[in-house]
Length: 435
Image (tube, rainbow, N blue to C red; front, top):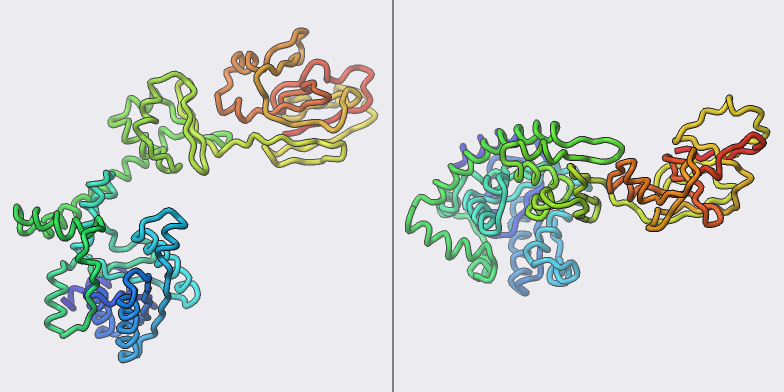
């Protein structure tokens, strides 16, 4: 086992001089890894988490690990957590809370003490259990390959070993360890899989762990091919322009497995409800989806994804020079206009007749019932009709802002000036709105 372990460390890219933070609970798995690192003269320190979930037993685990570290002259870190309170406060299960607390602390230790890697004692059985749990809950390709051997700075050098391998090593080398009483409790999902489901499956296939392990290895290779394919398709289907991502629905539906491709695209933005999103492709425009960071909408023949659009309004005073929300806008005043021919008119740089303005001005989102006289026209037009005529997307409508003076719309910023506020021959002062 020792030679296999050394080959595994070499494969991961860890030398004996690499500074490692080893997570040790005191159980059989972590004590085997402790012994292997110690006997092979790796540079490592130990971190032990007391999650306060088993009262006195938790404290005794910490004392045991500290004693072993002291006897071996290994640097020891310990931290006690109120896991139950943290779980309740953050609406997490005790297991997820413990994981979050553990890795947050490990990250701090790595930064403070310059550890290159965090080593955990996950083994092959753990990986098989993870795959089965993922299958039970529902998963994609990534969830079928179990636990990663190297995940950023987290290494798991025992993944190629089974639980039986570790038990044999423990017996052969007289390794001391602590038994976690909670491992026998089937109130946790992982324990149910370990203690109830896997034994039933082993009645059908006694070599279940080895068989599933080999399958996971194949899936890992399949995932590499799959990710390469998905990456090429994303580059083709996902278009970025003007701070928005768009997917053409017609092009997507021509692809093999369009629903899976759509999931891979939207999951990058934190959207997980693929069934509702895919169903929206065949519905009328306007189906909206939200998460903490992004807004997604089905609009005509496309899916549009953008960052959240603020509905805030802002006052613009005569002395205001710039605003950055909802987008970058600058304001300027020029006087003594001698000739219009020297002015470069555009929607991005609007010249407004200053004498017609009443400050402070207001920038706000457009609303139902808004109307203005588009530059060059004589009659009022509803903004909703204007947007339809101009084929504005639903996102473009949400992003649109109007500049208002004395309850009159001066312009749709960056889009169209109102006829009533244009410069005329006797204008001597212009107010410039630039986007």
